[in-house]
Amino acid sequence: MHSKAPLSHTGFDFDQWMDLARHHPETFERVRLEAIEAYFNQIPPQRQRLLRHLQWRIDMEIQRSRTPLAGCLRIHQMMMESLDRQKTALDELLGKHPEPRKPRATKTGTVIPFKLRNHS
Image 1 (cartoon, one colour):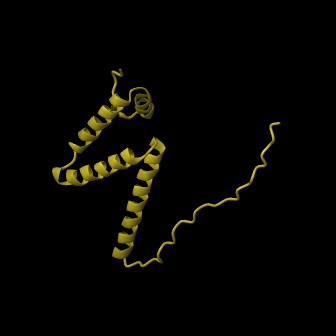
Image 2: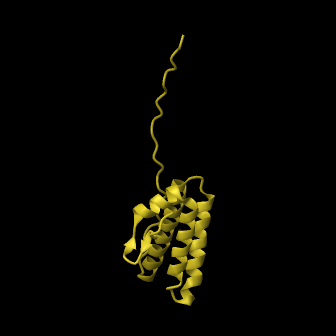
Image 3: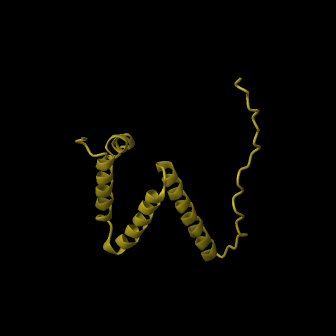
C-alpha cells in the first residue's frame, strides 16, 4: 500500500495517482472520493449542492463507459457543451448574436480493400 497520498498540500502528483489506479484500484477509488470530499468541505455550503450534483454526473458518465478513455471522452464532451452554453449566454448578455454553429463534420476517409491471400 501507499503511505503517501497522491494529493498533498503541495499539489497533485499525476504519477502517483496513475500508479495507484493501475496497481490498487480499490485504494485509488477510496482516496479519490476522500480528495473530492475534502475539496467540497472547503466550499461554502450554498455551492456544495451544485458541485455535488456535477460530481454525480461525472461519476455516472465514468460508470457508464466501457473503458477509462471512453469515460474521459464523455467528460470532455460534457465540458465542451458547458463551455458552449456559457459562451452563448455571455454573447447574449453582450448583445452579440452569432450565427448558429454548424455541427462538427465527421472525419471520413477512404476504405482501402485488401486482397485476401490464399494460404494453399
